[in-house]
View 1 (cartoon, rainbow, N blue to C red):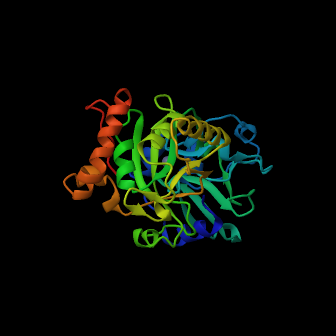
View 2 (view 1 turned 90 degrees about the vertical axis):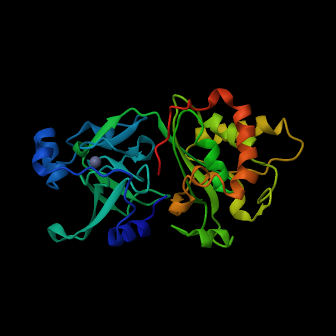
View 3 (view 1 turned 135 degrees about the horizontal axis):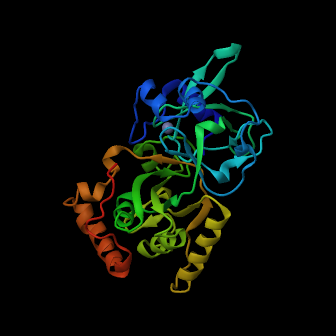
Length: 331
Ligand SMILES: [Zn+2]
């Protein structure tokens, strides 16, 4: 979860660039967009308060950039700020939005732009509701309401080289990133995490299509492809960074995780120690950790540790695997 301190850091140093950037000239944008949308998003305009019905809209779905259709906010993070502009407490992903210092109109504010196409969206303030305390004050015309089946799941079950290799093979999985979650600081390094002192767990963040694969299925697969009964340990890997953990983003996911644990517990003698905790941010690991298994298939760790796990998984979940022609996007 982003906090004000993260926003200030991003405004000063920039934040991670998304996989794709969209760059067009003002003229190209002008040809594509309605005049008012162009004025707000490309000329840094502001719409009149209470000028859109979007302020009072509270139904599930996503809000995407009006220029490039990149999804920026989930309806679950939308709240009634009584300001006359649609307001959110968090973006969908840490790098969905970029931040610039704005000293216009005699005020010092933080401007928010779409990190994919640089569309001006509005500003972010530190007077939002807990737990983030943030208020993303958006121009309704800079956003589009969309239905979306894309979801994120963050799971930890020992070394992320293993868990990433497994989830990448599932049909309905769009992308998997290896990284860190649940620690004391933002953007930890591998060295900090592997010391065990930072408090982070090695996790994977799975982007999936919920019309093909459910959160419950992902959790079931997770619980049955690592050992959920060993505390802070997977095979030869010891330490809290290897803990078994499921991060949930809403109450429904929490219930599904608990249901799956109950189901798997019924098949095991040992007690399941998997943590079920609220999602509080994901930090992508260094590039050499991404897609480790397919890049380093001949490494001893892959052959000795990952291959047997993968084979067991493929046998158990044959019907849920991708066809050979369905390739993942690479990080
Ligand atoms: Zn955009």
